[in-house]
Amino acid sequence: MTKPIIVANWKMNTLADQARRLVRRIVELSAEQHLDSVGTVVLCPPFVNISIVRSELTDTAIELGGQNCWTEPYGAYTGEVSAEMLRAVGCSYVIVGHSERRTIFGEDDEIVLRKMLRAWEASLIPIVCVGETLHQRQMHQTWDVLRRQLGNIAQHQDRSRAWVCAYEPVWAIGTGIAAEPEQIEQAHLYLRSFLDGHGCSHVPLIYGGSVNANNAAEIFAVPNVDGALVGTASLVAESFVAIIRASHDAHRTTT
Ligand code: PGA
Image 1: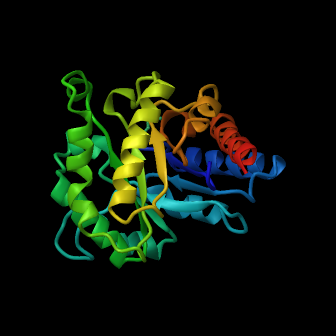
Image 2 (image 1 turned 90 degrees about the vertical axis):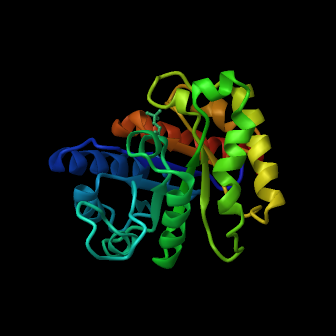
Image 3 (image 1 turned 45 degrees about the vertical axis):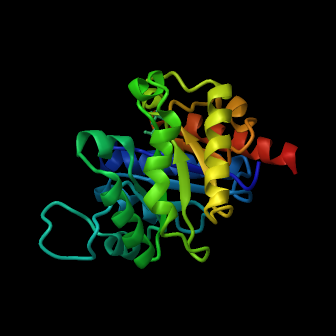
């Protein structure tokens, strides 16, 4: 495993006090277990809690990210938040194209691409989510879907731009049932060669979908897995820090 990147997606969870308590505990446990030095850890709280979380991260190596952004830098877009705004409150990452955005809020590949380009304009690192639904998998469309979701992104590649690709099979998100290691291996092999073939060998490839403290080590042992995007288990500090620790152990055994 290369230097791991572990991303916490808190989704629409945590009131202000809960966010403060959660980040404090994550910082405390990470320091106790000396988990500061290897790889990257990114916390993506709800927008309104970003500043609270940021104030607790001073003097730590933990980074901040937004869960979404709009395609324009400012203007009459009621209810939206721009990549520039995220940057100004201390974010260095932003998740784009999460399956919940695609399915609940109707975002298509074109919008995802525009958000990615906007994130770059604002000097943020986009974490781009791709993944097939259960129906698409059952219809043997997985590779077509992944190729389509990454197709227009690959055309806008520029080696100077950093981004992270997150493989998140929709059927594994929030279900408590992660994809099997063999399924992750096949998808990551496919995506890795797609990315490499489009000038993106510098792009880390992380897995998301029911990663927890018990299955993390097994998932991090899969070839071409560079980290994880963690939802449910990132809301419990002990579980999230155990996942970070598992990524460090996996990194150590391969270096
Ligand atoms: P989960 O969420 O870990 O709860 O499956 C992952 C995600 O949606 O990014």
